[in-house]
Image (cartoon, rainbow, N blue to C red; front, side, top):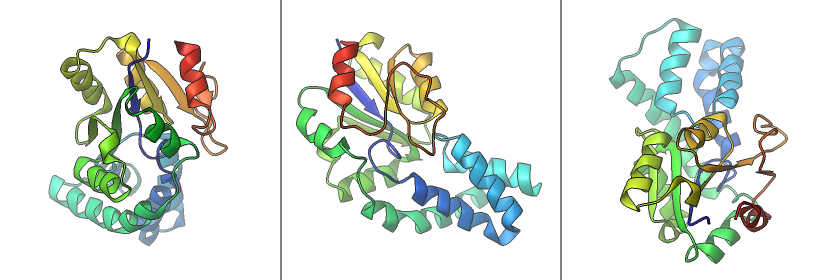
Length: 213
């Protein structure tokens, strides 16, 4: 019986993926379209990885530059400045807000994201959804660490938890802990299309959870 739902954030609760894709494109445009296009392609193929890791990888892989932590932080702050105001205004994934408001007393709900924790909590406060979640977890901790913390501190078994994500990173984290997994699949992101439980939005989330139960 499902007692707990762990939501990814971007692309699962908010329709914020395009905002972050455009931010990465803008961040690397000064290096030319070839570089910025490679960055965008890699970003879309590797959802669920923190911007800090991606910035290090992109500078090393595409620009041949090793960045120290201070430089990564500076670039990540530029990224944050680009996206924050826009993310506060984007739409919820269809059905997400309704499901959360309707079911937050029925399930223990958590957010597990690669977005920096402080920024993630700020966005949730601005969108007035913080009160629905028992915990809101972001980077630098990994999603696997989030799951371990949730299971340990709320004394949960793996078959009592479902993780809702839209990336292979989300799937890997769920599989590592033997959790149920529901993948959000869109026209632009089809990497989870072969998973057993998938949806295009969250309007039928109740139905899929009842299938698991």
